Image 1 (cartoon, one colour):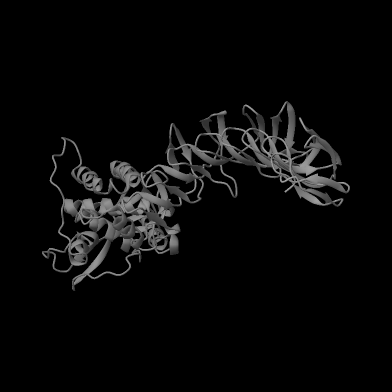
Image 2 (tube, rainbow, N blue to C red):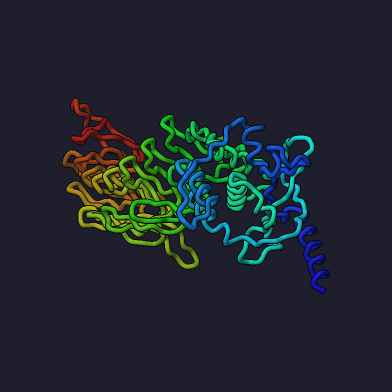
Length: 478
């Protein structure tokens, strides 16, 4: 009965090993008729290091602690060669090497072949022999590698090291064939990465079919492109969705949207997966990305723009309610700031500004602008306002514009009005654009009826009704 079960298991393993994309990965050695040949029982990775990539095998001699496993210790030493270029991959592989033997299911019968080798050349009279297999479909849940125990015991230290490296690298970066994995392993064993810079290394990775790599602290999706500055700092890349990034005191997760940097390595633009708190002149802001708004920074790391869920921020002359909240409708607020930290503009946000003790409420659906001294600059009113000066009173609505001293420069007169011009009360038409000088005097308006005005040279001129006219800052007709 036991013999029957063994045969069934053997057939099962062979069938699964051939099962399409679920076939797993095979660690292979060269087996030769001439068992005394130097290639016999050499891993394909080791053989190709010299024969294909023309690299000398460079495996360091290190002191192994008592009770330590030589191939594990040496493999961990070798994998340090990628640490400068792939720090996150290095940490993952280091852990996998440490745990390698705890993840092994030992067997003493042949494994079915796995056609994952890709292109290769081996000496005549030799063939490839499968020694290790990774296939979750045929392994217990707590194991990752199926290894032929008796053959493994015959392998040299170098071959075991190369197979361990091959298997943990494949586990970290599954591929359709092992060709790129073997090349990567060969370049580690042969120290072929020694003279690479980050640009050369990234190109090499992509050629071997690797899809991701850490570039200056972000886990980048290499398939979506990247760009480096001449100083080899990262300029543009797209992070892997959900990957982590250390931003100031926060470890955040990133959306898979393009991220940009300044040449000194500081972030210029990115998209967090969730809100992140950030201190500002207005207290703590909880910022995020929106469909058209990314989180951006000035070179000195002052916040430049972001989006926000509903929150209130207050300045000396205004209150801003970021994000619209209406029946059956809500939206994110979008804002930009000056480098000094003052709000530059807001969109999808209600603004209430104080101008000469009067509240001006701005339409949150339209962008509202501010000066860098935290004074309202321009926007579109949500409701009409009664605007009073020393020269008269006007009902103002629509788009309005102010100067840095909070003086109205332009708006729409919603009703007919009377205004002092050169000490005379003049009637002007409503529903027209009106403009003002910085001293509050009328600059441009439309007369309601035929009126005589004086020019600066003393000349008198009659202006027809409903004509738009312009005055200088002393009230003379231009």
